[in-house]
Length: 360
Picture 1 (tube, rainbow, N blue to C red):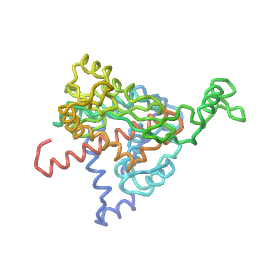
Picture 2 (picture 1 turned 60 degrees about the vertical axis):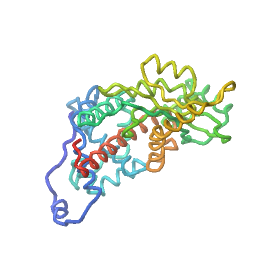
Picture 3 (picture 1 turned 30 degrees about the vertical axis):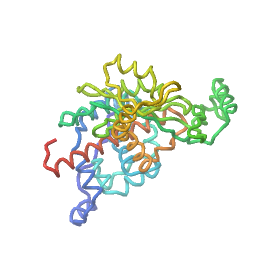
Picture 4 (picture 1 turned 135 degrees about the vertical axis):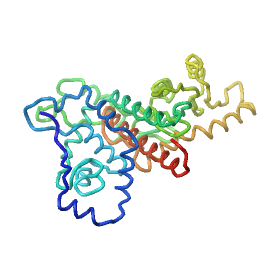
């Protein structure tokens, strides 16, 4: 079957636009961001174990890199729905140029984006994240020497339900009838049964929890994963640490706030030869010493960088609320955010270095 080809010949509309001479900041930014990484290497990862486009019969499919870049545009430009993404691709010259299509070529249907997401896995994204970070490392950025770990509440995309109701829904979903809709067809939409309740600082939240680790120097997101909201932060401390090791440089230091304080995490770091920069807190039988208080202050000046990621994704990507009703779908969504965030962060770093005359 193969993949659809991109029409690179200029139409009359494209020819006219080339003479307008108007400043298009989005186009300029995307053209420069296009040069930040080697997309061919990302494409090779996407094509591995990708069954679509291999058959000779049938309509030609969209190349996976093309669809991947479409969904990155969705994150970079705060587009909240797939139908709106389709409209913006059809309307915006900067998007068309970034995707390598002419103005007369239509965007994929919004349902195509949804189908494409389902073909991706979190494991695939871990390879892509590693590839991008290694490309940045090869350009001179020392990533991963120290990581900051934290977690935040992500409100559910569905309506809150009591724990009793959640248990009934989970039990029903395990039955053959619970996997079908009222017409007897497989469920396309399902209620949220993977989230639950948690109380934090006296407030009750219904949703999930995002656990993340961020490079302490440049702010790249190294690992991100979701769990039900009631799961304690420390349960994902080993995951966030070990899944942050994408590049050749050895990780040396792990920063975390007082929520991760405890012997299990300290022992885990010691066993894996990581320097412990977990903030200490008062124990029942021992108050913090002046040295420990000063140590906490120094750590807080570094570990804030993971909160910066949470804040930026909250502001630009509505990161405090889940987009879908299942953890698997939300995992893919936050993985796209991770990749989009890292590429944009790398682009910004190289841009600043260029202005200062510093070699990457």
